[in-house]
Length: 531
Image 1 (cartoon, one colour):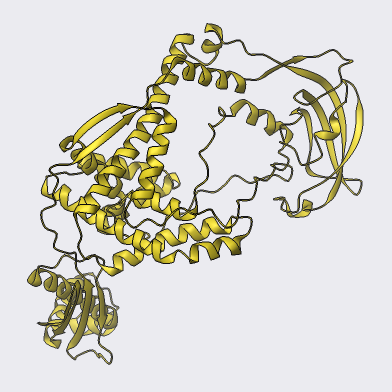
Image 2: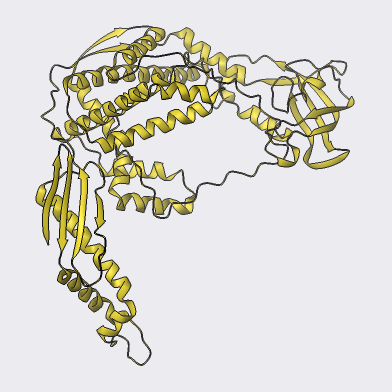
């Protein structure tokens, strides 16, 4: 086997490898000898089929396997002899015109990881902004939960239904006077104003009383999930069986016990812990941004273009998907197109920081243990159906790139924690608004981040939920989660990408799928009147 370097330009390398025909033939002969005892052929005893007949029967497949094996070994030899650390999977190609029985000429092209000088991690100074959780905030959280535990009691039969009241109804839906599948329910609970039924359904029941029968007319939304109902006008025959009014939930020990806790103090304790965890996450984000900005400012080295391009593709795909959901997708896409160079700089920053964190971790013995890796694999496998999970686990065990992708976020966190321990950290108490403002300020100051600009197109308002199946609506109400806190003002697309840039994940940019990808989980079938 002859290996010669044909390119050495920056981080780009290329090699020409000549594999003698004799080496390939030797591999073929060895393979024929290995499988001969397993071959069955009429007229020969098991294991006694002559090698020349085995070769005649399976020669093409054996040659392909042998050629693949020697090419793979040649690539490994190129890496070992030249002490190469590939940034991405090398591109390997067999010369045109190759024929069996001739020498094979193979080209290996790749980009290597840069040589990074020992990263400077001494002298790091970080400010840790902490947010104490007040008793008032805890009580607000308790009251939010109480507000979601809405209950209703029967009203007088003369009570006319109003916004916020609950009706227990029977209904039958019809298209052109004919009942349609899934359009009928009994004892359905409907809260007027909840928006759980199709537009116009709930509003027409305002003023209804117990025992009243009425027919309403509604039009199904054009984007309704049931094809035969999209945009169709339908009538619903309704019997109002009961009108109920909401009752106020009293916040006391009994309320907490109904949630499965010992008492109100225990509920407050749990909620305080959750609030502290939320603010601790923001604190970590702000500290990590400081850390990465200091590392980025202190280290500058060339990064593999293929890694940058792969990282940029990830950012760009996310941005274009977000743009497609805007009220004016064309304007939103034009907005980000104008900042494309900024996003490439963000991608380069992410790759550089990822390599830097990896180098710091390796130099200081930071590792993800086998036990931690098994936990990561088990968690990731949950996205697949039970019968496919072991296949996914096996795929990760056999694919180094897939394993590296899975390991990267945890590895990064461990390196960041290592650097936090090394840094000179001072603490300062602030409000949550001040902490959020500090995070926003860090975004604006980070290297390679475009200036935040107002999006060209505002995001379309959330669409009102189509009608849910009546007997599912009650379950949804029971399972409804506490109301989310008000989100901070929406950032421009550039700012979102810049924020992601500070994740600096030291992961392979391109994700490979399993050879046989486990089938995705099947969504439950939707009925015509659901949602």
